[in-house]
Length: 204
Image (cartoon, rainbow, N blue to C red):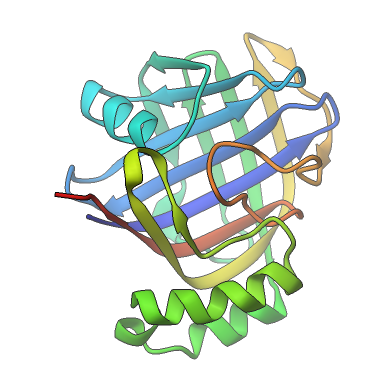
């Protein structure tokens, strides 16, 4: 099952870590979901419907799953530097601006799509990711014996981010420190927007 779109990750001065999955193509059609880890480690999935809630919570680990409307404004601009995104998902209101492409992003754009999305390439890039971006993995075992691999095609920093939870400001943009803990991999430590395809292989 392949999901193509973007993942944004950001830390906040208050200790909350945010991870947005915004998928333009998927077996379920276009959708977005948000993974939230509160300062005390409590992990929450904000999912737009029952299918997303079930699939994502079966693949990753959460302490709480909430089914709420998830709306994202801005992905039409893709990962273009200078674009602005606005996410509303239940208690979360999150706006961020996309910054410059990092050097690794230029390298990712040079990899042909079919090659970059293969499991073989994911296994090769996983060795590099472990060294270059600690905490980031490109292939691993997800929940319920599922195998998942990521094929990143672009990478930008976030230039700014403003987020509130139930109307309370979560604080200034920071690195994801400690890394978000939902599965075998985290987003990059620095606040980022990644363009990618995620493939999940489900055992028969």
